Length: 51
Length: 485
Image (cartoon, rainbow over the protein chains, first blue to last red):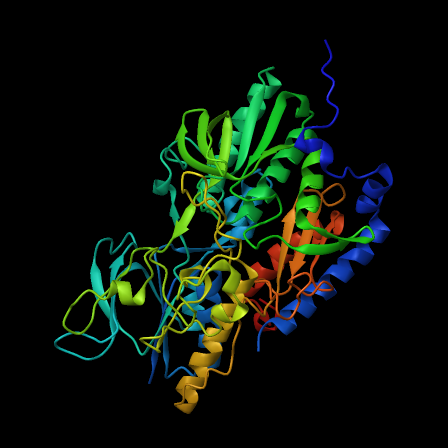
């Protein structure tokens, strides 16, 4: 018999990424841009972090 | 001539000794005392634990590097600190015991003008019955543990290939463990490796943690801008798990492990049991139990160290309640209040309190993460300690101009979620500051523009580039000092 799970368990209340979201997470041109954005964000934090 | 002794060659200690040697002229001595002959880039141990990197890719021998730099290296452990000297001399010194195979067991007294205690954590497996690689669970806290863990993981792969289902339990192995980020990274990598081998249907993967909610990571969680909302890292972390079919147990204080069973207490005061075939659980951390003595050989350990054996520094240890915590409680110079020529950057310093709210079960057991301070913050602390000592030696004045409070500095935590240049994944997280500043940022505790969480391949590239960049820096390759901590 197939078990049917509908709600009322903690796993059902977390957001599940859509196919489009997953596509962007591995879409190389977009990820190259994000790579540089992440680097800039981290450099900003490092520079501000200590005096 | 001044002599600086650095205890430890991890991220904080190695960073401190590297800059001290670079900034101080050769008339001054820099001595490193560390029990291990290797430096290890600890964040990459995760990849050793899933077989994506060899042990030799994450470590290198310290002695040749220190010889090249002109740093004196003693492969030994510090057993006691004598900050006032003894009855024959008022010169401060430490007692060490060699771990170097050629001098094993030999002891020596090493005098110092400045002492940097960067001994990092003692992996306190003994605090949980049955925990650790010598008992019933695995660890990725050091390269040798990670290597053993990879061997055990391969055995599970073989069993699954033979049709035997396996249950993986990954998370924290003590009610007060920290480093949830490392366990989070490991569980995502294990899931990725199982999926890559087409064995996902044969594996039940479960997270167990002392966090009140997922995404706490010992920092009280964080708020990030995501999908048009400002949302909590709880949602971000749960989404990672639900996407991968990973179940979770939270608010769990693990107190005992038996072969194939973990016993834990919940914040509700219930005692529960969870079975496993493979468990990787992070232990509690403590200091290394170094003793301290005054000039008449009286034990002053409790003046210099907190009860958890971590060193007292310029923090507020008054034990004020959670509601009164501020970022000013946190240290910024890592200088010992009684002995100003002693510093303790990295995990060796005693935090004034946790960052996450301390919570107790109905039975009175504290179940909450202790404060993380690995990686980037440790490197920054090591650097500013080196800057302050260098200026003190050069000018003769303890100006302490350089500061790095966890209530002011940010941190990046790049969690690899699967190895692969094209099909890898990650959760890239930044927080600023590490300790929430509710006075400056009353709504979210942190600068919402500098605090972020982003899944994707780019973070994996970043993590991989950090592996090579930080090893380049640690090995003292050309222009190492231009690279950030």
